[in-house]
Image (tube, rainbow, N blue to C red; front, side):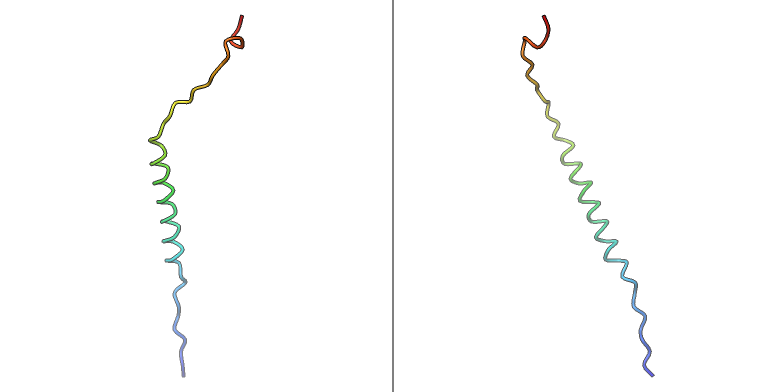
Length: 50
């Protein structure tokens, strides 16, 4: 008689991929959060008021 071996459900690989993607997203947010640039808006003097 041949018994079939029980295979693992395969949850490790998707879990590792999800954790890697989450770590990559957090790293990208940290790198872009430091680049704070001031935005300058030009307003014509005639639109500012009388």
